Image 1 (cartoon, rainbow, N blue to C red):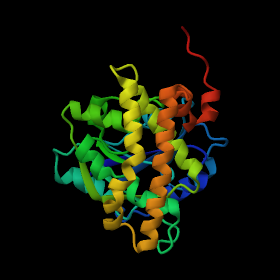
Image 2 (image 1 turned 90 degrees about the horizontal axis):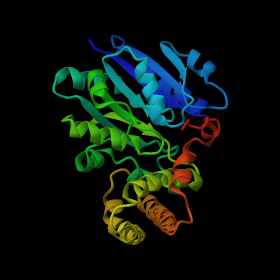
Image 3 (image 1 turned 135 degrees about the horizontal axis):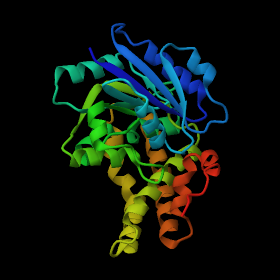
Image 4 (image 1 turned 45 degrees about the horizontal axis):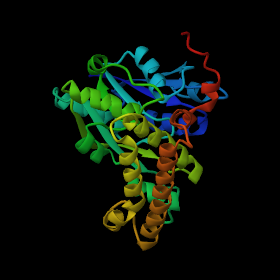
Length: 313
């Protein structure tokens, strides 16, 4: 049987990390060989107490900010022939580890797995606006895999030798999950969607939390297009499309099987209007030069960034 190394980047979420570790240690197959590597990425306090409460947990510290460098450090210390990645604020669904082992054992040709990420609502019968919105529009891993060839690193499994061949995750200046998945695809390694490999992610509690996410992602997209021929006009046109796009998403909201009742669907649409308007505003500010892409992408971990020594010339 394979050995699975589970790698978890962590930043100032000790309570969520405890829930994540508890979900991993509750997995139903006691015969699985598993090690868990938590890589702290600049927390105010290392989660020593949380990690020590669970068996087979190794705690490392990565000073370079960003989930990519944190995961890379975890990989460098991993012993398993399968690498499984989950985020500290996620809860692994029942059988998550068993499904990963089964998928790789049943089909030697499978090299990369991307699982289903769902929103864990505090009260599924009364979702908040952000829970309703993210239940439909966040973490659409099946679409990412089929349309763009990558999956999110918050629910990813890969054979260790394939990870070595593809190379490390990128830093905070790029969308490291998309970059890594598309590099893997160019090398001939296809990501397979696995619907029974489920992780639950909480919705953002406040709009500001979601805003930081979209600042970072929009800044990454802007960095990729800036400097290309006609980039400014194309970018502004794209911002207009984002602003008008909620109309095209009405059917998705009405037909989603992840919402129940018209109240939840109405909240999802209201959240969509709010988020898309905000994204369009960021895009226009970047095009006009009133916002800086590096500053926006760096807000993932401002505490760590402040402590980075300057690069030598």
